[in-house]
Amino acid sequence: MKPPSVLGICRERVFSPGKVEDDAAIMESTLAELSCAGWEVRVLRAEAVDDSTSRPENVLSMAQSDRVLNVLAEWSRKGTRLVNTVPSVRNCYRKPLTRILSESGVCIPPSRMVALREAKERIPLWSSDRLWLKRGDVHAVEDGDVVSVTCREELDQALEHFRRRGIADILVQKHVPGPVVKFYGVGRAEYFRAYLASGGEEVTARVAALRTVAVRAAEAAGLEVYGGDAVLAEGNGPVLIDLNDWPSFSRCRQSAAESIAAYFKRPLKE
View 1 (cartoon, rainbow, N blue to C red):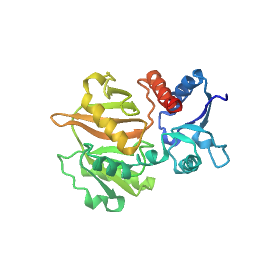
View 2 (view 1 turned 90 degrees about the horizontal axis):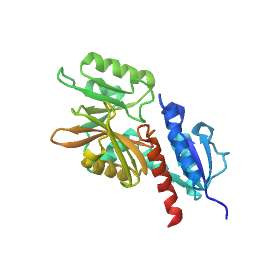
View 3 (view 1 turned 180 degrees about the horizontal axis):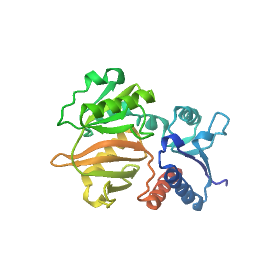
View 4 (view 1 turned 60 degrees about the vertical axis):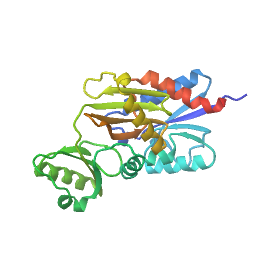
């Protein structure tokens, strides 16, 4: 019997600022686990995927560009299994993600999307404020795409950055004080790890409430392999400040690769 096969697609370099090697490493580690289990594996960078690429039966994908997602969507319509799915990746774009998280009851900072052309007039900022401005389409791809501002001068500088980048909309979020935790997950709580952003201390066992929030957020977006950031706000529980499809898992790469591979193999046995 022919062994199952899988194509791993590494994220586009433009969407891996400072993490090209880390992003590739989690994909390669996951494929190595599947190879050891008897799968035929191969890997491509997303930039190399196009309409001429032969359609595989299974795909593990970190791709985020609209061009590659369109190819993957066509493969999916023809029967290819994708993790993560195209709709779930598109759900992680800023605009849909903010709406999805709000509608699913996940606690996020007070947020609103503002057209850049109206931002200077529509963003009130007093000396006591601290706001976060985030590009309104995809996650950060260069310095300045996510920035905190506390005064009008910083706001003007941030808006000029977005203007130079041709970004039409920005997400404005109120700052939430508290320690920031980075989390990583696979499936519906089958795998979950959490670490303090400052220092990297693992706090998985101490943030049960965050695990619940993260799983709910991932399920709402449709993600199977995911990560994100949350603030442990005093008295209010975890506040989700970011959710993304397939992070680098750099703090827990090997255990995550084993879990992703086990998760991916499971439907073939059922």
